[in-house]
Length: 78
Image (cartoon, rainbow, N blue to C red; front, side):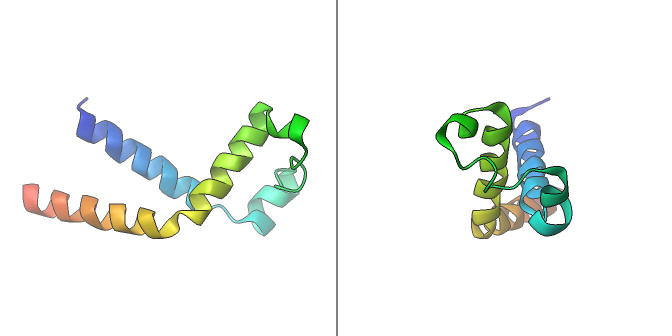
């Protein structure tokens, strides 16, 4: 497993987190950002994961660019 494979895996994970819908997936399971907005709960593992999910949702444009670069590299490298 090389560095490129690891980076591709992390990109796939970021894509998976970016497409999660709050209303359909996160809210019914109690993973709202409002529920962990307190300082004490934001430091918990659940709060950190919810913060990561929301961070990836705000970084969709850089994810699109990274996906395009990855696709181009895969096409060129054969």
